[in-house]
Image (cartoon, rainbow, N blue to C red; front, side, top):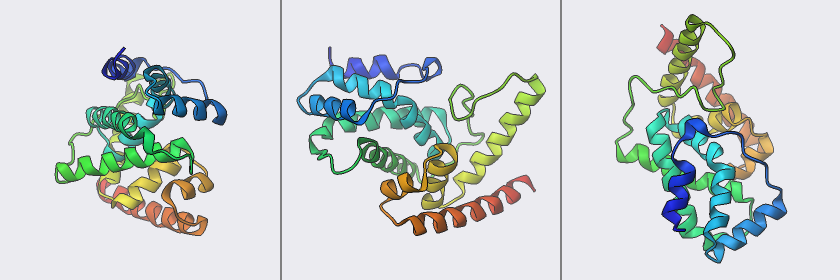
Length: 207
């Protein structure tokens, strides 16, 4: 089975993906080692484990379903091509996050920070779940999400990034510190600044 086949089989339809089983550090370590030896099946397992996670980060930064899918697939291809460079000095998820982030910001730069209007809201994804609700309730929620994404799109990259990690991915301050390579104090201060900036943009969007 080719790498392209693995990618197309596992990334084809995000709307049908369920929650993936957690891997412990030993299992993940073994899978990465197998990938470094060219094991396509091991790569397929890592994709299955992280496809929701990668898509949600990309969608949180880009705010558009198709762009997030494209970036997610590009990120996994980059992982496969560069897995031999991973030296286990950090968690695999930290290394993967940095690849996804760079792909997102490269995507934004490539299209001169274009904004999709209206932004597509993908209610099937796990970080925007819907409870049982009337059509009116769902329409209101969709409108609220649209407003939030429009406000996020106006923030500078560092603010949008930390809000995605904390508010959407619900990572701890310690995890964010490792991913961003900064102190806990800087994480907290940047998050405070980002929340204030988002509040300002939300007020502008609403009014």
